[in-house]
Image 1 (cartoon, rainbow, N blue to C red):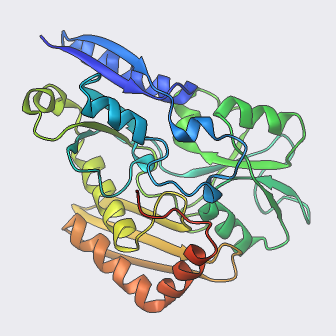
Image 2 (image 1 turned 120 degrees about the vertical axis):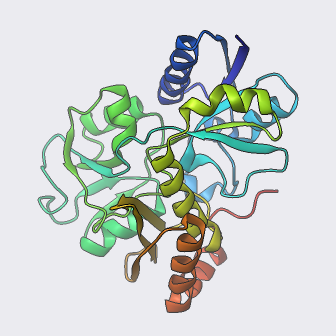
Amino acid sequence: MARLRIGSRGSQLALWQAHHISALLRERGHEVELEIIKTTGDRITDVALANVGTKGMFTKEIEEALAEGRVDLAVHSLKDLPTELSPGFEIAAVTQRENPRDVFCSSKYKSIENLPQGARVGTSSLRRQAQLKAVRPDLDIHPLRGNVDTRLRKLEAGEYDAIILAAAGLNRLGKTELVRQVIPAEIMCPAAGQGALGIEIRAGDAATRQHLAFLDDAAARATTTCERALLNKLGGGCQVPIGASAEVRNGRLHLQAIVADPDGSKVLRESREGTDPVQLGESVGDILLQRGGDAILEAVYGQGIAVPQQP
């Protein structure tokens, strides 16, 4: 069996993900080592993600370790991976998906609807902010950075009336005590790839790809490929106000997607069905652009609050 070295960020959730993959590989008889790598996104913790302006901010240093041969594979939250991988890399596996939805967490209130006028809600995601503002324009949205524990601690300390997080991370860490509402995709369309892990390797590394093949989940691969094709068509990174949620229904892919103005004043929604993940994602992306998504995104890029192309 092989000796495999995994590169991972050092956050609690990233380590859970890396250990989860390590355990599955060890069950197959592989020897596994873990190298923790600090990324740009880990170092910049006092600025809202949408203002940082670096695509691949959670992946660049890990890819460097891959390229140099210090690690053989990297475990990422797929939503953090740029839709166009740097040359020399490939996604060897997309694991079985956790719940891709966003969740409403609060110590005092049971849903978005129950929040009082002007309630303080924490999120650093323009996508979440835009969709919250669309249903509750009165809310006071404030930046929220840090790992899951830090965010929950700020909520419990009363800094926020509520915060919005991904269901997947809380489920994986077993920290669901403050989850009050799983938000339907019709109200808050998730980020492309949310809830899925992407296992990245050096392009052409056939041996490692073969070792990881058992981790690749067909449904997760199809749905996330579709969502990422839409995101790529719209030219967006994970911090642009774009949502994409694909599901397999009766053997066909169903995709719903949104492009939103950050202040929630305009939310464009589109849904379609198809069988080819890339074709479906790109066609829905085209429709959204034609319906005015291009103007929304140009304004967002112009404000310097979206993520530009990777340098």
